[in-house]
Length: 402
Image (tube, rainbow, N blue to C red; front, side):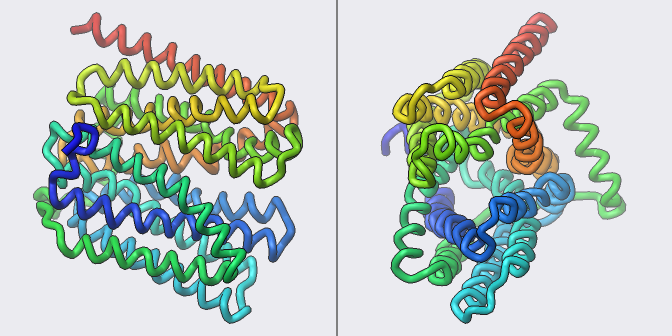
């Protein structure tokens, strides 16, 4: 098997990756249809923003609790439960839409419930990957996992758009529900070790404090979590400001925004293939630093792009730098932590990734309203570069302490 896909030689990961890609394509179709449905029902940009906010906020609020659950119970069983709940949510929304009883209130409630389940699903899935491959193939597995996400990000919205045009949003939700059957099937056919032994006398509060203490007192873990949070807040500018650049500045409308997102995904796929081809996990700090700098420079260039074609040419660099940094940071953190702490630390990590979407959306949306989209994007680029400088200084400090 090609060096770039060596993690697929492990049966459990191969089955898991296949099921997850099918499920993610369905999820991307679902997200596209949900956004279109909300806009059709309300004709309100505020309603769209509110729906995204309630969908992502639980990851910020519940990340530590989700991490405790991932450390306490079988991760495979937790993912089985979360994927089953995703299926049920999709069935409910499909039924309401197909029968003509859907309202924005229902969509909002179901989006919030989806966010709660996702808050538990993401850190558990991230913690599950090291149980499916040997440590030497962890970087490759995480890169392939990210590659599958980006492929779904390319295919899902397009398939969703065609399905909406042909059959309506309800069928998209039904197809998403069916896609979860693939991952549920493979999860019943893979073997994973059980959870590490835990002192039953230890309370949930104590476990939470243990996780916080570990993440804060281990300087390398703490620094990588801070780096991830800072970069992801800056990178939220793509989702928040992208529609404004595509429509108000470049006059390309929603089609133009979709093309820009495709450019981001294309760059991310190239970045993940390159990362997957690495035969070692050493020197990841250098990958993280260079990727953060590249993302910052790309944001700066995008902020000053004079035309749509120029902006489109820059988006692959943004996707390459941002996603490569995310995957490398994920791997770096995973290789530093013991398995008994993995769920809790990855719960904090998911807060720095998914949890930054609502926080970054509010912050950057307010800044863009006051200072304009170009200046806001420029500040995000400066933020990435300052974060890279801070990370480099911390890495230099650790090197001199050895």
